[in-house]
Image (cartoon, rainbow, N blue to C red; front, top):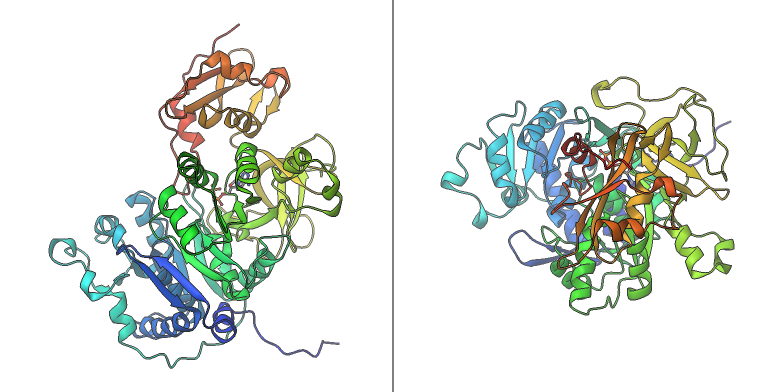
Length: 549
Ligand code: ADP
């Protein structure tokens, strides 16, 4: 017997229509690439999204066609999120930090029909416009007065102006209804190895993920909040915040290209931001600025940190000095992306501050409906609550089942009804279900057959007051095969020796885990999503001779 409830597909457009109808006057504020601060409301934005949906249709965009963006976080990008997916096309958020060759490869692979870009990325557009095979229209996300002309526009065929497209239509448009399993958006994994692979989300998976992240023990989003996603809208849909903000009716603030400490801090304060989200490297810049200028956060209460491990030292600085609660979260492109969040359980209330920080620095516990297990090399499930770490496998309705165009073949391990997705991360899970990532499988250091977790070693280094950034990689060792080598960037003006840093490890870890050597460098290469590129470091130090005692 079927239930007798209304059949309403879970569509992305419903998030916007909800925000428009129930939170219509709530503000959306953006720092524009033109330089000024722009203010609008959900009501006005929804009307513009409908106009854009009509404009795209007039350009010939059909259901399931890919419409790409190369853009910062801003209201026009948000309008496209809804105009493209809402009308049944697929929003493909390209990462502008990638090399032009990669952008070309990905745009061709995705068969993008239209590409919308912020003016900042004009040089990148000029580098790719003559090369991509399928893009028919290039849309500059600006008004007529700021349109590139002359040499700046040369070589870009069919260059259109975003505001002209909006002007060309009225807002009488009804969002179409279709199967909730229809594809809605496409993101490519940053592809630290091999070619980038596309993850194709559906309306259903996106709406379910939005519910999941908005919950109190996830990112705890509410109408009372003012959310500033620092995490780019080209990095796994800004972790879902542009959808969650509509679902709950929160005020939204977009930082545009202003991701330096000063610009972010000014926006946090001026707009009374309560919640933010981003990768650790961004917070480092912000904290240095706030610290150097003796400032405080007057409204910020929570910040979500993920994408790579949040150093416990950062989580403490936020908590002890600024009274900002860090929500450490873990996930990946293939998971929409949020899988776990380090939210407390009742028994943590009685713990000391120290012990609570220890819970907060794990990657957290599963967000419903994500399920997780760790397995050994033979694929056998490992028990929770032991020191054993294993490969992390996940499953759930917003986790990838295969890559776009079946790139790379079937990624799942088939045991059980849905199969499990191997994340490539290595972790242990405690008795309460909190996961602690010890490494990515490709970053693991294997010393004499035993695993050494590079993240633990980096976290300790990061707790040293003279260290700005630290990466721990495997260096070749004649006896142990691999041993940890610590690559460190010092804070400006700080004094630190190899010996002093190695002494700092004493008593904090098993002695055999202590790095064999330290090299000081000016900078550690960061990838397109702000993560340390350890593969490049490994390449750089592949012939490094460790001291042999
Ligand atoms: P890529 O795998 O290409 O870097 P993603 O942006 O999807 O692309 O990154 C997902 C990976 O980032 C995870 O598999 C994990 O290794 C790492 N990661 C994400 N969040 C965390 C976290 N909180 N702690 C440690 N690692 C994390």
